[in-house]
Image (tube, rainbow, N blue to C red; front, side):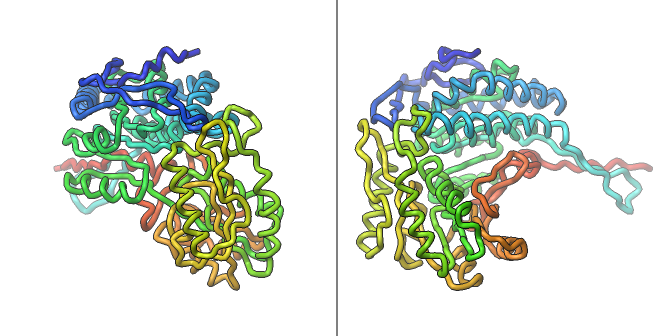
Length: 484
């Protein structure tokens, strides 16, 4: 078993642990208590440059990119095995760092991270080209090649999973990577650097630089040695990332914000629907870009469903993430807690009805907020239209299918959506009309590495997971051989 001594809180560059060039370090806070638990190195431009240079050297020497897909797949299978063998350590780190309930860290985050590497290990040898029929007196074919150095910039809410969704396909395709995790939640990224090395990933193929977005992230984004950017984060920062990458004509995968609508029709199984609705907005304390914070309910069952939520939601266990019974932990940082408070205050100012919750929970000095259900807001309210990113659910009635679809599509976002109905025909009909990258029917957050996800509109572009993700880390080369 791997121990925590392999995660010393330093940068991981070229297969070596090192301090930042200027010796700077930054604090990592336990959000369940608001206390500092450790410090990690804070990378500056010189450190980012060293990491990119190490990744470029590793790519050019072919120790990874020159391997067959099958050989790379064997290494990635070992990564998946090591994740499972070290599941307890990884779950504890993720819970401490993000404030996630320990039970969910093991069942969701660690399990999915292992599945990510395993899935892309299996895809590593599937990068087939194609023979093209042409009138030329020539043999024409295409082949897929790795892009080079990938900058993977990941957010605070799912550090382990969203790193795997980028590093898995990037490595499977033969690229090298510089990973910049969120400054608030860097611990699992550092731990994974050790596991990747232990699995046999050559030195320099994966590098981890911890530090702030405006300094380390910006330096990585602008570095001319980076060939592709894979970014998950807010829409506002995503616009900046796309602009900078566009100046250098770098391809980008962007998984950005979301504000998903969850539609409950009158023919839905309300008992099952309520379970999916609650899961959709409290999972990961609402810090889930594919969460379902907007509930749209057929008017005939609107009062009934509100009553069920008013009774059920306060009973969802909120508390110490180390307690196996906890379902809702703290917000990941105090600034996220304050943002939720501001939105709920705005809802009150607009005359909304707070069905339940609506206030922070005083517990151990942590950043806790009670799960909150809000009714009687107009659709043009900022609370409805904007991404709150916390355990807050707004509820709106609708009169018919057309209105439900119109309300669902009325925000700038288009990442995920959900439909609760007993009609198979309606499920397919409505799914076709929803402007989102993924639609769930009669459940929420059904995710698997084989199923691509990503956004439209302000939720970004490109896809993670599935063979579509692997294709996004390659370039197509055409070869035409004269037969004269």
